[in-house]
Structures are given as structure tokens and as C-alpha cells.
Image (cartoon, rainbow, N blue to C red):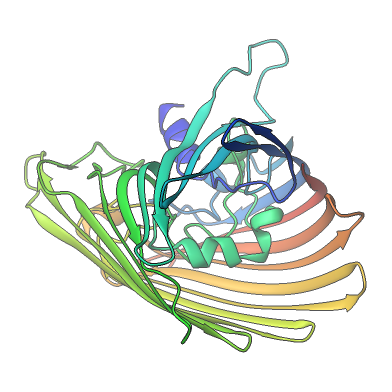
Length: 384
């Protein structure tokens, strides 16, 4: 049970609400908004037993059952987000706190009181100097992948071991590693007229979260560093980024190593058509999150296409795969996770979107075994 809780904790993606209640208090403009969503998910699992973080396997994909149903959150949790902005002297100032909670649990009587304060930061800056951010927020590396994923407002891979008490996984672990939330000091350069942007952050170092084994690495005095260069113009957005952190061995037989990961991606909007591609690669990249497989070289790919077929209807398909290069001890024998999802997204009104998705998740072992999870989800999300 502890492993399931930790795994689910990796899957929360905070986002600021598109709609909000605004009011003025002295020099401050205060906004209060949030997210509520729920999806009926049905999954069935078959195939071989695959070790490690096998999302298509019976243990994680179906929560230990052959078939399972949950009515819970999709990739996003429920959230309440409060922000305050002000002009103080020469600086634009902002503070934000985001509080999140899950819909589904395994009990009808136990208190659903687990609260996740995933965001709590303040920032200051202006058009000449850029913006400095201090506090807890999502990382830079992987942000474009997850926040551009069409299943962000749906479910993606409806992994049952994480949906009860947390959320589904979208393409986390099957297309990209989780963006992560960190204590950080970050800097965003001023917006360039040429469309070039730059972001960098020094973040609090994290320990590995292996899920399937005891932690073998710890974080000491070396912070994690993340950075990203972006370009945007005429419907095109492209990015290249990286992250690095030293991990110190804390288990017998393990050796110190440095996580080193890079990312390259682009999206293109042409009328009603949107295309997305993203690649991640690195040692210590992890299947779900930083170094969750220790000193393992991993690659992850995501491709996606969406098209607006009517005024209120958008359809899309995406495919992602996360693949380990070698069968190190940290993989638990897992070679790859892959997921394909087809989705229909209906805008009921300006705050509610109704979603239907079907998909398949496959996990392969280095020994040749394969597990499969078929899943479907139907529900909706409101931003207020």
C-alpha cells in the first residue's frame, strides 16, 4: 500500500484555473479559481507478468485485479488556486498557492482529507529584467510535454493503482517522465521580439523514488539544475532543455552517479490542426520521476495530433513510449511502457469540457514477456 501511495503522489499535475473570481483589495488584485473533474474508468489486464514499473501489468494497471472500475480524477486532481498580483514600485509582484485533493478512495466512510499543496511561490520582475520566482512549483523540464498532452484534461492511461487516492497517469511513464514539483529559485528572461525565451532554475535536490525496491540513492549538497530555451512564432513553438543532479549511493552495491537528461520538442498550430512531438533521453531520467530506476539510461517519445472537427468538438490521437536501454537492477526487468489514446473532447460551455477516451497500454520485459491493459474513460472537467 505504501508503494501505491508513493506512486500516485508522482502523478499530480497542478495547473492554474482558466476561469477565476477576481476582486481588488488595496494594491492587490486577488483571483480565486479551481478545477473539479471526475471520470468513469474501466480497465482489463492480460498477458505476462512484467516486473518494475509496468503500467500495463495487472499489479499497477488494474490494481491487482483482472478487471477494475473507478470513478475518480483524470490526470488532473481537484484543485483550489488562489493568486494575488500587484505593482510595487518598479516590480510586478505575484504570489500563488494551489491546494489539491483526489476524488476516489477505497472507502465510503474514511475521511478523504489528504491535501497536496503542490504550488506555493511568489515572483517579481518587469519587462526589462525578466521574472524571478521563489517557492514550490512545477519544474521546467517536461512541462511542455505534459501541459501540451491532450489527455491533461482527460485520463490517458487510466492506471488503477494511482487513480484511487490520486490521479491517472496520462502519458507519464509511457511517453515522458513527470514534470515534478520542487522547491526552487527560477528565472525567466524577458520576452524577446524574435520569439526566443529562456528559463532556468536551481531546485532543491530530491532522493530517488524507486517504488519497486528500497531507495538506493539520496540527495546531499548538490542542487538540481534545470534550463530550457524556447522559440515561438507563426504557430510554431519549439524547445530544448535539460536537467542534472548528483545522486549519492545509500545502499550496498550502489555507486554515486549524476542524472543527466535532455529534451527536445515542438508543436505546430495550423488552423484547426495541432501537431506535437517530444523526445526525452538521459541517465537517471526515470520512468515516472527522477532516478526512480537508479543509474539507468532511458528514452521517452510522444507524438500527438488533434483536430477541431466542429465548433465544440475536438478529436485527437497520441502515442507515447518510455524505453530502458539496458536491464539494470533498477528496472526490475522492465524494457518499455507504451500507450496509445484516442480521445473526443466536447466543449459544453466555456467552463465545462466533456471527455471520452479509449486506449491501450503495453509493458514489455527484457525477457520477452508482455502485459496489456485496455482502458476507457468517460467524464468531464470544470475550470472555474
